[in-house]
Length: 598
Image 1 (cartoon, helix red, strand yellow):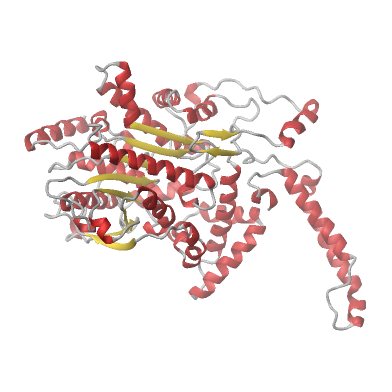
Image 2 (tube, rainbow, N blue to C red):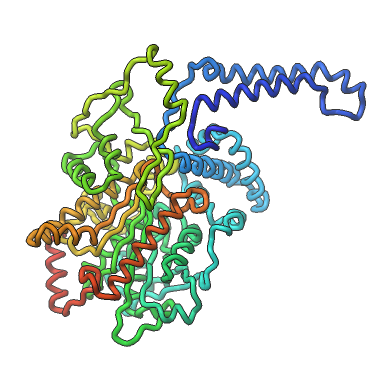
């Protein structure tokens, strides 16, 4: 418990906790029993009371005999995350274990009470919490996934986190109509007429100020395609709306398995078309005649997949649909491939992208160098990370510095390891299969629930609406500027790096005729990637617990402001919405369709 609360698993802290428990039981056994009703009863039961406490102390010591004699197993995740991130996952694991244990209880009042009582128990027993979660995640169900992911919307937790949710002038549920006329290319003809799209509107000002807005952020919330409506993201979405000063529309798209692929994609695309067609009037905006609504697509996790595929749908639509001003993708899920090994082309992209992103050095180093006798070990994570300054806290504790020196003569040297061939570099989904937030079992469950009941054929090797990273170069070249943030220890980090690498290569090829200086300046405006060392998935939902989250939201707000300001001033024609004549739009669509068919 102590090592988890401190954010760094340590056999030393575990050993201290065991010794303190045993010593406490022994000292307590010397006292009289806590019964003062009758001295005779206390006298008669004193011996039994002592025997019970000393027996418990002996059993506790025997249970942790290996730990007390320095024969314990190595702590595999001792240096995997930053202290702050590990501490938050310790709390989240206790919540998950408590909520999952009590999810079958009835009535609801009893279930809620038991959930929080069990959460307190699992906070004191983190190892039991991990075992409980692993047992549920080994055979996940839709109910289990939704109980775990939707806990942020629980009324009690919302009350406890209200201090981290800023007050907004507008924060309400709304409904977006489908575009008129109704789309004819839907994959669900049996669902006609298609229902309206539920959403949630966030704005820091008044309705009168909202009417004067010219920009909108359209959010596709994450949740593995099966859970988490916009309310689950209220904390960080409200904070972002306050810091940007722009309205945010969070879409409550249909979740699998009730609404399988590609329902969510078509719903997000229809919402985007409705916003553009009504010029924001559907959410209360009143744009002057002739002015175009400016939109940024924001997506986290599975929502990042939906944001990118919405752009692909806009490119291939029969009627011309303008591109958004930018894509803002936070730890996006851009590939459904579950390969163990990376291909040589993918490794080359990661190596090339690491030259442009300082945070990718550890990732590339981890893929190409391993300890000779510990091939699955990861480089140690920093203690913390300053997002704004892009600086990691690499200080080490006294035990890390001195204990290895004391025992160096008794241990083999396992620090120096060989270079592993590029052909044996593992994908991040398998390199971080022990992640505390996103496990392989969960990824498999999300994929099966999302794709199994699809009304259209599934092609995992070529369908870029399933895996946006597989899109042909012609589609990638049409994408707007992309801004990406991902944790370095995220199982989905490869999706971010490979997508950014392909995006960079395609756009550099498109502008290869320009001078080198102008090309580098153009790419600096079109692609921004920030990798967070020692952090994994879901950090936006840790606002108020993870210090880096507030800094990340500041960075996101700065990006949003820069994109909209540049578009408003027409300073960067790459970010301005492109309007084509019908004939030119038709020619472009035919060229894209030919590229897709190839």
